[in-house]
Length: 177
Image (cartoon, rainbow, N blue to C red; front, side, top):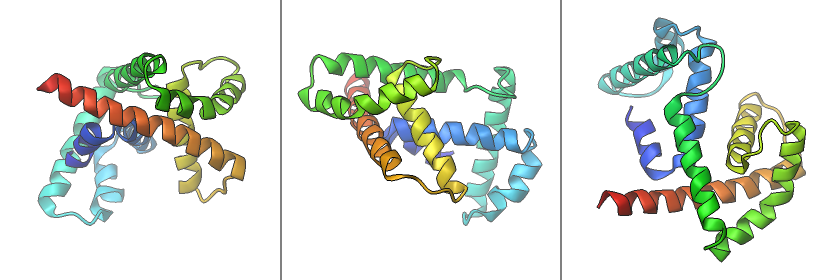
């Protein structure tokens, strides 16, 4: 799918969140490609060739999810690996980039709160940020309101993820040349 590949290239955090959303969509339709086509793809204003490309992308996603045994929960290995790469970049930047350190410092209280709320089951700050942004996306899609404190947290997490995505893209570009 062109859209997913563009996200992967341009904003890795958006791509990861897009993949979370796509995995859940596949699960919500019980891995039934015909239903995804009928209830999702057919309603997207795309040219026929783009709809076919999207259908093939979902077919590939379904196949990969089933191969990896994540029918009920979890994420694709590629998505997990990308999250680990973002976390590695996060750690590398902490001692080297003062701008990023300031961004992390403003997000740190929110990260600590989320770690406590997860009962320490998630301690990776990047996973915390991704989960929170994805969670807020789900709330928004379901018409739920968000408190000003949650908006502040979302802004802090978004700043971290945006900075990391920018640096990730720079590093990917440099290593591919």
